Length: 371
Image (cartoon, rainbow, N blue to C red; front, side, top):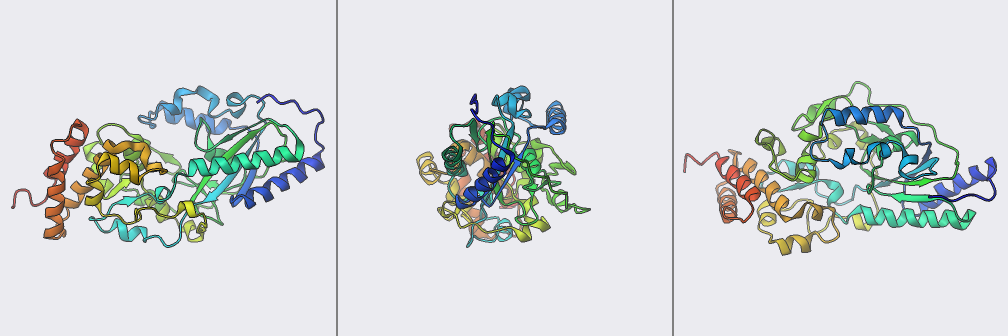
């Protein structure tokens, strides 16, 4: 980004442009827009300590770009402002999350991944917004991001007034809870900035208390190595055995810290059709998913964020969930036998990763020594 403005916009013109950006963003399906500067010094210190403590696990990309992640102007030279946007994703007519989590024969998939992948949708909308700005003022410097580069999107959103950082390290809004995606436009336009909002978590520790694997080690501190979202999505290897029971029937991501958050009483349902559940993934049968061939997995996850983990990690995750279900003494006989049969069919899988988790699941069967 290296655009030189021939005429510096006046303060009044910039204020009008800011309002225009907000109006156009809402018309494009973004529920909230805010503007921040690029000063992330405090967040940079926290990030560097988090990395030093190796809490990022296998996410080596978190350290790969040095300080470009915490210094927007280093990532995109010329950046002086960041336009942050929010897009709500909680779909209507979705099976109640707790009811799925309470039924071991069902598999739980994080609500954000039930529909189409948000990356392309939001990137296209942000590009439309950038094009519209260009039509208003002429050529300007910018770059669009949707979870696609070293960007500290949550601290930037907090600086832009979209919400505050909750104790679970997600952004919270008094009007929308936390069920939303974030996106950014880095720009060289010196737009007026918004004020951050105050923190409203108070003394609540619901998110910390509910975490199945105690990944939230203290308020505002997350150890990704223990987080179910990390273990089922980002982590490529064997899931540590001591953490497997806490995963329950969560096969892709985890929403518990959001489900218990009092502020999500105010979460807004989306009217974006692309975020509606596909293939009944809001309450799917665990065994059916485990029996998908790789071709079926690719077909059913086309256009979905789930596809990124690949078929092997899909099987790994479901094997853990099946093992946890088999440990449930209340599991009925027919379901139990169906799960055992499905696991045995994968015992000779080509992948050592899959075989290991399948064997663990079978060994976890509470009826194993009592046929």
